[in-house]
Amino acid sequence: MHDLKEYFAEVTALVNAELDWLIPETGQGPESLRAAMRWSLFGGGKHFRPALVFAVGRTFGAKDEQLVRTAAAVEMIHTYSLIHDDLPSMDDDDLRRGRATCHVKYGESTAILAGDALQVLAFQAIAEDERLTKDTRLELVVGLASASAKMVVGQQLDLEGEGNDLSLEEIQNIHANKTGALIAFSAIAGAMIAKVDPATLESVREYALKLGLLFQVTDDLLDVTKTTEQLGKTAGKDLGAGKATFPSSIGIAGTTQFATRTYNEAVEAITATAEDASLLKNIARFLLERES
Amino acid sequence: MHDLKEYFAEVTALVNAELDWLIPETGQGPESLRAAMRWSLFGGGKHFRPALVFAVGRTFGAKDEQLVRTAAAVEMIHTYSLIHDDLPSMDDDDLRRGRATCHVKYGESTAILAGDALQVLAFQAIAEDERLTKDTRLELVVGLASASAKMVVGQQLDLEGEGNDLSLEEIQNIHANKTGALIAFSAIAGAMIAKVDPATLESVREYALKLGLLFQVTDDLLDVTKTTEQLGKTAGKDLGAGKATFPSSIGIAGTTQFATRTYNEAVEAITATAEDASLLKNIARFLLERES
Image 1: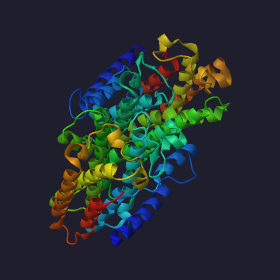
Image 2 (image 1 turned 90 degrees about the vertical axis):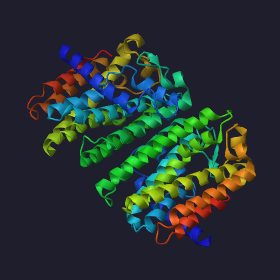
Image 3 (image 1 turned 45 degrees about the horizontal axis):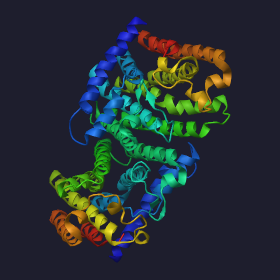
């Protein structure tokens, strides 16, 4: 896994440079809003979604300069959703990536507006990316919008499900919307930018859906098996909130088995499709084995 | 002004039918979210911004079927901004258009998510509008994103300005972002869809900027001269919150004069440009003379 650590570091550097250009430290508009956006954007996230844009894009022959803006936009949407999900009226979380959440640091109204701004700036960033054809930009806007709308649906279902005894199918539906949709889009975006053929796009979509599921399954496992210090965010949160999770539904052992099966399905989806699928396989393995 | 009442009613019917198709009463996703979006979308707004899309579009030869989706998208962005601005941590308003605000009716988390969803669905709606060329769709996405980002900036500046003694220039900057940007985009969108030449687009932009200013000036006047019942929203709110306004800065008489001058400038910008500018003139006059 040493290579993948370097890979994530490389992607983080590329994406952070693009984000720093898109939302610079000084410029137009109120400083507070800019600072709040940057606090959450540069909060030490893993950049898993941007890494996926790059991994799929590179695997199918896209250039880094064509991928970096979309990778940054995906991170902006992810960050906006974290800011809003952490709000007092939502998950009411004070800690994110080992630091104060946006509303704790900058106040609630600024946090809401920083999230609103990040969402819209992500669309503007893609629509204005002159390194991509207009057709590709429009495809990406539609795909990202669809994923972003699903995240809202997932969050609403998640909040409404608190304290209820949900079926595993219902839990999976929540996760497919809340986290799966943007992870799937990240992979598909890389394929769109590389202009792959429709059959390849389908394989990437299948791989991405399994990856999204694997992400949530391991997230649920970490929540019950790790400490707050290890995670850099509040551990045991799902249990405390009475939230339905994979472990609460099928147990820790069952969830671990389910994770391995989902990993195998993700790898199977992509193996025959790419000339060299090693990076995409490693990313799936990274999810299976992650410790935070 | 009889004609304009009919015109607004006609636009409202067209836009509401499109909105009802885009966000139907029953469909995918949680009912609560859908109900919250529809509560605010169909809350009896004047549809001034959609009316402007249609007015400019029709004046320069665009067809209604090319205009209606963008008009609906503008209304979605406007509605999202109202939902978020009304939140307890922002303007904390219970009343909007004579009814309970979204968070009062559906709770705070649902209101935040309904706003988030409306913002992103507006972009998706335009990007997927097959009645427009891909070039036009992309232009509209960029323009709407830029306006939507400015609205966030305006709201942040507005909140930070509360209780401070702002200059008229500072007040105008807040309004130019908070309300002017989307009004300007509404007019420009109509011109983009009609594919006018660059000189005409500039005249429309000038008209739209004056219109945006006129909107805010008359809004400020109504806040101090009308009752809550007459307005359908809390009157005297700006004064109570210690907000800087045109009347608090240059008095009621000075503001009334300023409104008339701005109206004349808007009319002047458009008169020589359009073959028949009567609709656009009437819209400016509607703003000057509005009572709510």
